[in-house]
Image 1 (cartoon, helix red, strand yellow):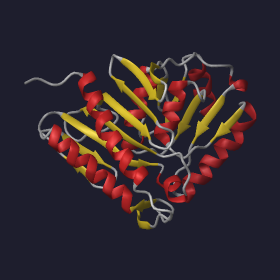
Image 2 (cartoon, rainbow, N blue to C red; image 1 turned 180 degrees about the vertical axis):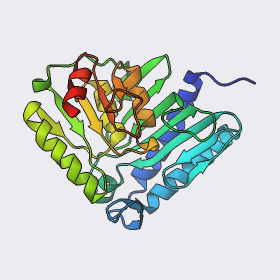
Image 3 (spheres, rainbow, N blue to C red; image 1 turned 180 degrees about the horizontal axis):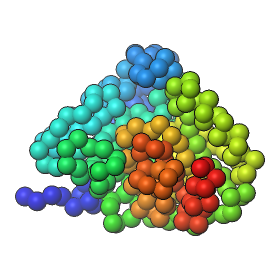
Image 4 (cartoon, rainbow, N blue to C red; image 1 turned 120 degrees about the horizontal axis):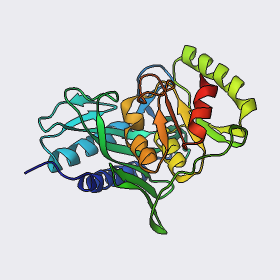
Amino acid sequence: MGEPTPEQLRLLAVEVATAAGDLVSRGRPDRVEVAATKSSPTDVVTAMDTASEQLLRERLRAARPADGLLGEEEGHEPGSSGLTWVVDPIDGTVNYLYGLRSYAVSVAVVRSDGAPHPSTWTVLAGAVVDPSGGETWSAARGCGAWLTDARGTRALSVPSGPELGQALVATGFGYDARRRAEQAAVVARLLPRVRDLRRIGTASLDLCSVAAGRVDAYYERGLNPWDFAAGWLVASEAGAVVTDFAGGPAGDHGLLAAGRGLHPVLLEALR
């Protein structure tokens, strides 16, 4: 049996992300406790992060036992098929902790030789489920990107973008204090040059917002692969240009997503 099509993989990504989204939404107590910290005391893990990733891994192992898995909480589990699922069980954990509604479950599948890395992988399919907003974003490589909500499913198409001075730009901040200071300096220089900035706190939803035209662009440095794998594909398949800050593959050296007209202008501004 050969490799499944990107569309088949998209449907599976939607299925498992929806199940995890239902878990984290329905299972959220009135008060969420911090279970552990990751890169810094402000980079938190909740018990639901762990439970959600366990659900994702169990569902994906059952459906695709030969595939690898890369998750935020449990790391990399190699497979033998050449495909790896890259999952973020709760993107926007701090929002989830505080009861803010901007959080999501992100699931992508990539083709990669060896350990999956954004510089070498090919993203085949992905889904981002926003349980609070009742929205599911998904994409299959070469087939387009879609938003599914109470009104049905519709294809996404990113406009070229406005002039820089009229651009609504989303961004995010890391957890390390030194990186935050650097990012604040970039904001101070960029803010007078654009319409306004938005900080949602969930990278996957920022990328999906670019895909839907809710913001004109999104940039951030310091993202992990699971933060943007699915959202990257949704934005790209919708027509956005997604690169790092030097115009290369997004990942280690930052991420910038924008329409084709705005992207080079904003890229120069961020340099």
